[in-house]
Each structure stands twice: as C-alpha cells, then as structure tokens.
Image 1 (cartoon, rainbow, N blue to C red):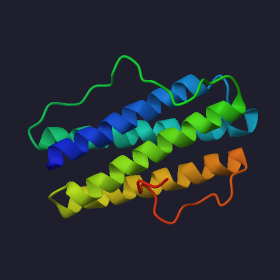
Image 2: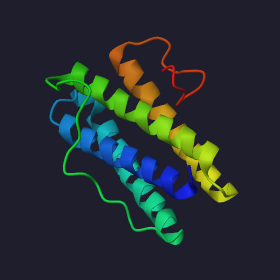
Image 3: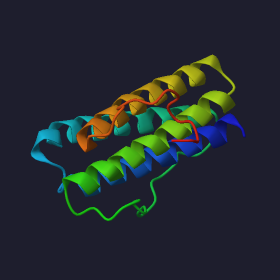
Image 4: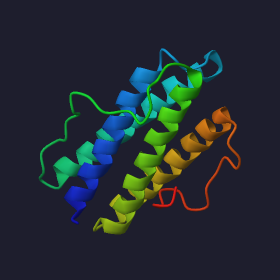
Length: 144
C-alpha cells in the first residue's frame, strides 16, 4: 500500500467517526456530552490535516460518504458509547496501518499521534461502558 492509500484509509475512518459522533450526540448521557463535542472536533481537525497531507502528495482531497453503517442500533447512552468505541477502534486500526505503510517520518509521526489520540478516546468509552481494563496493550491491533 502506498502513502496515498494509507492516508485515504485514515481519512475514511475519520469521516466515519465524525458521522458516528453526529448520530450519537442525541443519545449520549449528559456526563459525556462535553467529551463528544471535544472528540468530534479533534476528528475534524485530524481529518483536515490528513487531507492536507494527501493533497500535498498530489492526490485529490477525500470526501465523506453520504452515510455510514453503525455497528449497533443507537437507542440510548450505552449503545451510543458502544458505537463510539467501535469508531475509535476503527480509527486506531487505520492509523496503525498508516504508521506501517507511509513513506516519510512526518507521516509516521502523524499516524502515531492519531493512534495515540484514538487509544485515549477509546479508553474513555470503555470506561463509560464499565469495561475493564479500559486500555489495550496494542491499540489498533487486529485482535481488538
């Protein structure tokens, strides 16, 4: 896979996460509303940075799909947190793959930063779901 393809996959994961945060906003518990706002903003910033990197490589900007399939039907705070954890896990997988596949140190740093941010947000959602442990040893690994 090339740097372009790795960036495109990461951007797609970011767009899916942004969509998921949008859907779940109405269902998340009041204690997590501030986190939702902060986290969706972080995903938008990261997506825009990745798109800038993609364009710098000569590829066209990646656009969001019209919609995305969520892993669960969101009907309340628990299913919202479950969907958000899944979105963060998918982003972590994309960033882990990106770190392995890109050609420059700058893009690897961007990938590791993205992976770290996803791992922290995933820990938040595992905590909200009462899952223990809240962290994983290898964020973004296939066995999650």
